[in-house]
Image 1: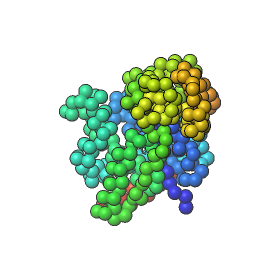
Image 2: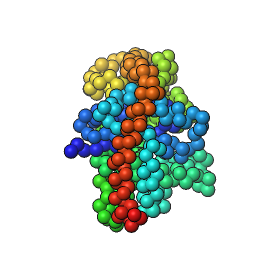
Image 3: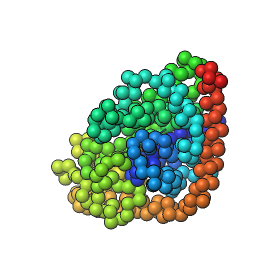
Image 4: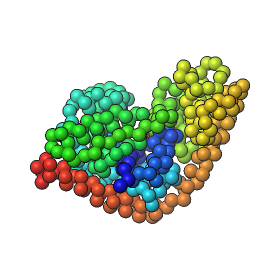
Length: 328
Ligand code: TYM
């Protein structure tokens, strides 16, 4: 039997090239080797306020992004989290074996609370229990491997802890999943501030290249991207801005790292940025054309059959969990 992959993204903002290079690219690359399940995690999205008038639209648009990136519904299961109620049900059971202390240590919770004003008294409980829902997503499907960016590593470790705790206390119910974090591209930084990761929720759109950005916007963002002192175009941990830009060039062009350095030897930032913009634009052009091709009707059938398949697997896991805990 093929090993299983599960991963997902939130429909909370436009996906950017960090999401693509850290996660989606690997979802696609791994789909022939693994039995893959890719979820649009709309229940996670509401841990921060969303506009009810556009949220459903954004959820469906994210499905189009998955498909345009190369997720093939003939090979992989694609579904919307809220179509499989077992996610919320298992979250409850897992929250009963989760500890306040371990959730309080989650850096994403601390960061998001900080962004919301830093007032613990007013921080959302959903934001706090977010990683438990993520654990339920993964564990429901007896997942072996979870392709994610660096920022989700801590959540994956928590997932493993919860699975081990449940298996120990109630009997074997879950496979212990492993993270798949790519060696390069797991943490693409903001173009406006190389000390910060590229983030959907960043108020400063200049820091992110969104997958649906038009050519002139991309050119502008790259031209304005922050650079470090010095002139070399090279990978150098002491110069995070140029390293980040060159990493994007390397991953999107497919040119090996040493060839990239060779290619830009003696050239200045201006030339480099021009070529980088071209590579990004040429990479995104066919992607954006594919996004336009999907009609909502085609999407409906894919998501419906995805949810049916997902429910079959999730239902079995939840039934085992309810048996082992004496609930049923
Ligand atoms: P989300 O929606 O924030 O991001 C989707 C994926 O993109 C990765 N990512 C990045 N990779 C490289 N550089 C960046 N700057 C960057 N920013 C984001 C994320 O690591 C992620 O893999 N909690 C998850 C969604 C989720 C999930 C799951 C993932 C819910 N349940 C179960 C895997 C398995 C999240 O918020 O991703």
